[in-house]
Each structure stands twice: as structure tokens, then as C-alpha cells.
Image 1 (cartoon, helix red, strand yellow):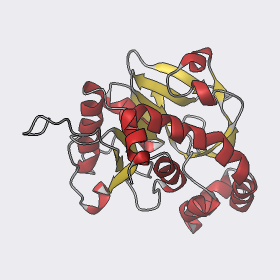
Image 2 (cartoon, rainbow, N blue to C red):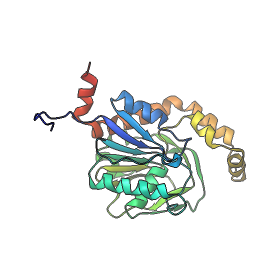
Image 3 (cartoon, helix red, strand yellow):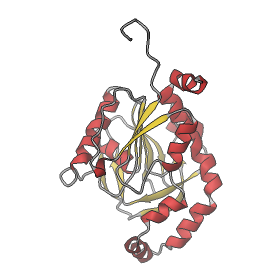
Image 4 (cartoon, rainbow, N blue to C red):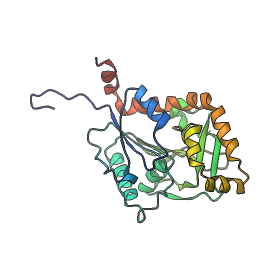
Length: 256
């Protein structure tokens, strides 16, 4: 309420925590903006202080190369976990992508560690569980679709009370509802081939080759699937905007 008794309009802002330069919100951010959201992006790796959740309708935490267990090496890792715990406690709609998913899992008591089967790279089918069919966020996308994976670590054990919404064919967690209004995805709905190409350094290319993975073929397959991936994951951004913005979405779009 304002001093004259008038109610302030709900916020349209979603706080985006970007843990690394080369994994911006990119396509997912664009889709959120198209759905009426305003994004506030902070870069803790570059020294940005994390704001509180006051005035934010939702929280999005992106991916990156650091480990969710790097609290001592990178002090901001612990700060992001604290922010995620605050979001869950305050019932702020939250989505973590790749590292963001791992940070959310670790913050709430899950276990994050390197994948025993090694690095996941490329397009993988999303193996939905029955629980996804009535999930508040993922029910609308819980049909056959592929996603881009590029990770070494996984949430090996979800937090107490979490609900697994999707697994790979080998059983690795892909999508988890970590708390009633907090979700994590191991896949990367935000990227295109150009973003993934920035992750393929000469060292990374050689590491992939040692495992029989052709980096160029991976990039070409992601580029070729662009329309498919947009169709698959743009609705997730729209659904997250619906949950986060609620009535504010229409107010923002109706504003002159």
C-alpha cells in the first residue's frame, strides 16, 4: 500500500542470476520478455552483489562451469544458495537451469556430484515421469521433446520431498520440482548453437574427442534442431511467466 492507501501494482520483474559470462538467459530471456516480464540480470562472478527478492516476481538461475559445491573457492556460490533458500521460504516462483538446478538441489539438501557415466553432451530425449503430467509448470510441456545437454555434474540425489519430473534413458535426473514453487532443469532450454559454440574451447573439443564425441556434429545437430527446440521450450518460459507474474502480466501488457 502507498501512503494514500492505494495498492501498488504487482511487479513484472524477474531476477536472473547469471553465474558465468557465456551462459546468458538468451532465448529463454527473450521468451520471458515476450510474455511480459522485465528481467534484472546480475553477474555474481563479476562482483555484482545479489539483491534481495523484494520487488521481484520470480527468480531464474542460469548455468555455468563452476560446481555447486565450490562454496570455499567461490564465495558467491554460497550466496546464491542462500538466495535460493530465501526464494523457497518466501514462495517465490523459481527456476534453475543446469548449474542453477544443481545449486537449488544442493541448497535444499540434495547431493550434487560428477556424473558417474561422464559428461552429457548434445540433444537428448526428455524422459517424463507420470508426475510431470499434473505439475503446475511442466504439465503443458510433458510430451516427447529433446533438449540440449552440456554438463559434467548432476543432482545425483534430489532434496527431501522433491518430485522427479523427468529422467534420461540412463536414469539421470533431467527435471525436478525441488519445492512446491521451485524447479530445476539439467538441460539448457535457453541456448542455440552459437551459445554452445562458445563452450567448446580447444581443450573441451579434445576432451569430447577422447570420448568419441565430435564437437562439430553436436553443434550442427543443435543448429538443425533450432525450430524444434524453440517449439519445445518457448512454452516453458511462457508458463513460468504465468506463474511468476500472475495478474501483473496483463497489467503490464495493457499499459500504454
